[in-house]
Length: 61
Ligand code: HEM
Figure 1: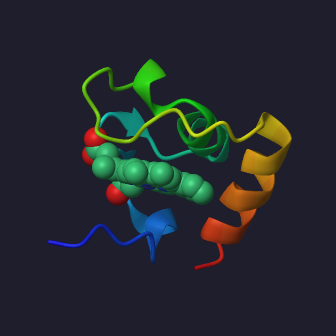
Figure 2 (figure 1 turned 90 degrees about the horizontal axis):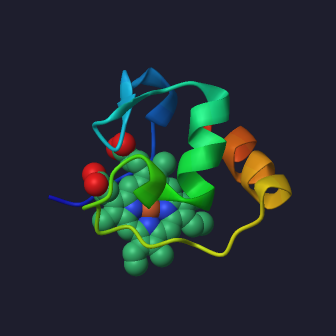
C-alpha cells in the first residue's frame, strides 16, 4: 500500500499516533521520531519555518 498524503487533513491521526492538528503536523515533519520512536520516517532536517509551509501546502491537498 502506498503512503499518500492526499486528503491528509481529513485524517484523525498523523502517523497513527498523534492528533492531526496544524501544529502537530509541523512537529511531525520536523521530527517524527519524537512522537513515534519506531517510525520508518527519518528526521528530515527540515526547519520549523519550512515545515510550516509544507504543512500549509499539505492541508490544501
Ligand atoms: C518533505 C518531506 C516529508 C514530509 C512533508 C513528510 C510527511 C509525512 C506525514 C504527514 C506523514 C504522516 C502520514 C499519515 O499519518 O498518514 C508521514 C509518514 C511517513 N513518512 Fe514522511 N514526510 C517526509 C519525508 C519522508 C522521508 C524522507 C521518508 C523516508 C525516506 C518518509 C517516510 C515516511 C514513512 C515511512 C511514514 C509512515 C510513518 C508511520 O506511520 O510510522 N517521509 N510523512
